[in-house]
Length: 229
Image (cartoon, rainbow, N blue to C red; front, side, top):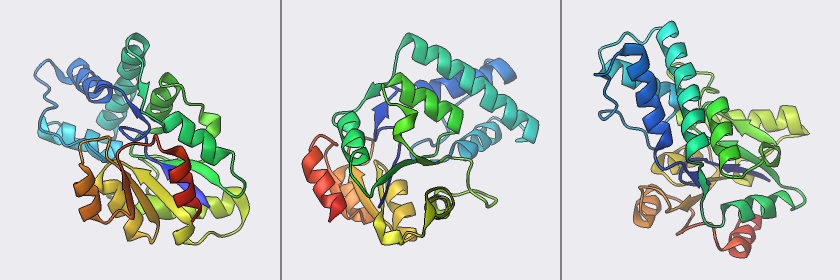
């Protein structure tokens, strides 16, 4: 089996450090009037977030501008997390450890984060990157424009290349806190565990089609039993 965790508000909380760091990067590069309040963040891919931030501020989303925003975001996030570390959400560390100790399970990440910023958040909250053997990041879509729905298939292809052997989509479990996590899993025939620790309520996640919804990840044994079923 392949278990794919979202990061923000599923495994951890940065108390908004990511959004604040993107705004800081924009203001450094383009002036104090740079406005990050009109852009949607939850469950979206970082490349799309940066594109929209630039467009909403009437800045041409060129390759150079996107690269500058990405670099500035990383620097500001490192600084913010150094001052106020991310916090692992209830049960998250325990669940990652529990599934990682099970034979026949490969644990990984499926996230909208860039690799360098996602890694900063995880390490700040006390997670080891070594716990995640197969990771799909926000800029790993092979398509233009990218979409979160593309990422589970990337994970399945990487499983075949990196782990060896094929895996059926129904043996892939996506764990996330947004309707985007639910949607990308269902679009690819994967199972999905919705976690109501973000902005989406349990009802939101159920309506989106999650196969199971939990308030948080604290019921380790019950969640592992459901995954294995």
